[in-house]
Length: 211
Image (cartoon, rainbow, N blue to C red; front, side, top):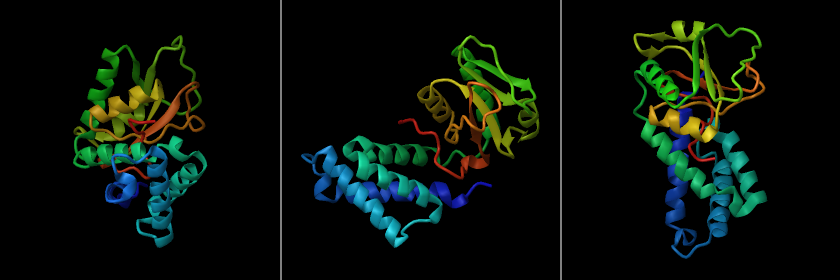
């Protein structure tokens, strides 16, 4: 089940963090990426300690604090938060007509030479022989039963073999949020499993246009 507070909490956190950075010495034009990363890492650590945001995003905050401490500027925390703020604020109003949006996204993918299947039931492990060509497979049963009058009424799984930057931008351009890809849970060899949820309310971090 999706967590209604997740999207709003993540956007609120990213916005607050970037506002705090802008108001600090680390936000000055002459500040280095290392200084910015150090500030944001400490800010998120304090937010965790103070329980400033919904516990739904505690896992992400913990991960980013760990990355900030171990990777320094290479964690690119500022860019990550800017991407979250842009992507989540832009898609905040995209909660209706997601079934139609998915159909348009799949047609757009076809126009870009991606193999798309929506007429095959996916219940057991499958293998698609596509000679390495990018492909998107949606279970026929889900595609027929989880969309009603152009509206997504239940989550839908997409099994995708494609560059994730391409997929993230494709979904974003059609107002859709996909979950992060999971290769272990995929039923189709060489594909990752992604999920689309009603009203774009994901239970975890979306696939971001920045990686």
